[in-house]
Amino acid sequence: MNNVQKTQELINAGGMDARLSRLYPDAVSAARERYLHLTELFYEQYGDGHDLRFFSAPGRTEVCGNHTDHNHGCVLAAAINLDAVACAEKTDDGIIRIKSENYSGDTVELSVLTPQEKEREKSVSLVRGVAARFVQLGYKIGGLNAVTVNNVLKGSGMSSSASFEVLVGTLLNYLYNDGKISPVEIAKIAQYAENEFFGKPCGLMDQMACSVGGFVEIDFADAKKPVITPVDFDFAACGHALCIVDTRADHADLTFEYAAIRQEMEAVAGFFGKTCLRETAESDVLDNMAALREKLGERPILRALHFYAENRRVEQEAAALKAGDFEAFKKLTVQSGYSSYMYNQNVFASSAPQSQPVALALALSERILAGRGAWRVHGGGFAGTIQAFVPYDLLEEYRRQTEALFGAGSCYVLQIRPFGGTEV
Image (cartoon, one colour):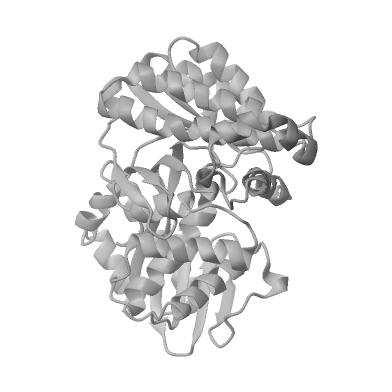
């Protein structure tokens, strides 16, 4: 019996159930099958393994703080019960090999840890970027063979890319650094890889929520030392389901749309000699709108106004949840959605105005949930998903209508996961 077979025998015998129940308390049987599938993929890719180990990094949901993190704002975010998982072993050849199911494998020779232009916007750049940052910060790295399976939907607004980045960082953390690197540091490393190697100027929220886990309020005023405050709240206890509706729109070629939000917000800050909106006052923008309009146009001003209002809403929503005032929270959630639509303007791409699946999902949600639930654009926007808080008595009808429009399985009911990136 080889090592892979021994691992499978252990899983089948329930030898990992206690660990799996920590991450998947309501789905241990399904998790067992998923991890068995991982070992099969590992054997198909690499043959027999040595000292096989398992790792997990969750996706995330943004509860409030739409496009505020990259300008040092505040967010409410939570890790979710969808995750990227890996089966891995250490090697001594100085090569990281990661094969993701249904994708071609990524191979990175650790002798080359500089950005490669041909790898821009490809997953291999994230692997190389994470490894490079480990070295820059004085951490250990080494070769490994890994296979991954990710049920965080790509392009879903649940941060499949961030969960993958955090998973790579988690692999190197536990395989070569005894798990001693903090979740906050892993998140920063993942963001560095996406900014400098992948080429997307994202903020830190996605990586932080995936790496830290739980439901948290994060203040990025000092991005080097973000302030993380746990939020103890159970949406189910308030009679509502946390839903994500995947419109199944294509995120391809939208990096410039995302980048423009950050660039335009920073252009407004630059007008006042600052680098980000968190360093500026809303009153200054309001007092100088004519001059800003003449120099920058209207949209940067609108996006700046969204930033200030959304930043306040994070604090207001956190306070409402801590006070148990779920009705106030829902009203603020709807306000957040309207602000993203009217001011931040990330509900559809200006380059393709005929395609508006997210706007359609919001319109349908308003018709079903008005006066009862809440709805808003989710994540980066332009394509992808919306978020809704749906009363349980409306859940089946909400699911029926959204799936009739966007396809079977497009409405997800999520749970908040208390753990971030971890060895299983």
